[in-house]
Length: 83
Image (cartoon, rainbow, N blue to C red; front, side, top):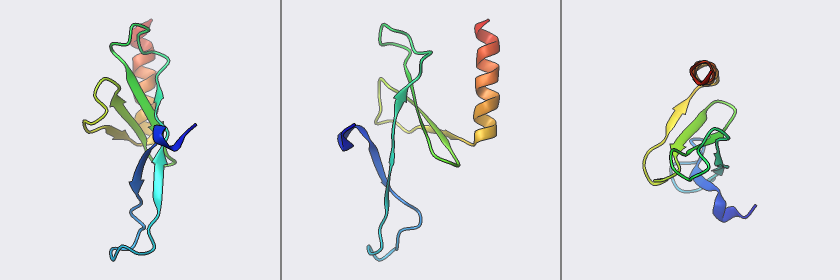
């Protein structure tokens, strides 16, 4: 995977004076539940503390961040609705 496919952001642990900076990347993946026609697509990226969700049609818009327990509840609910 090239680094161009990753979304880089500055860690909250970086220094405020511009030194000691750490950048972290989100590896966005298209959900397997997204439609094959390219519409209704959802992408997810995970970190240890947060699951990030965005609309793949407009990746410049803000994304939603959920904690692991909220993400698990969402996936459980979504799976129940699909049946």
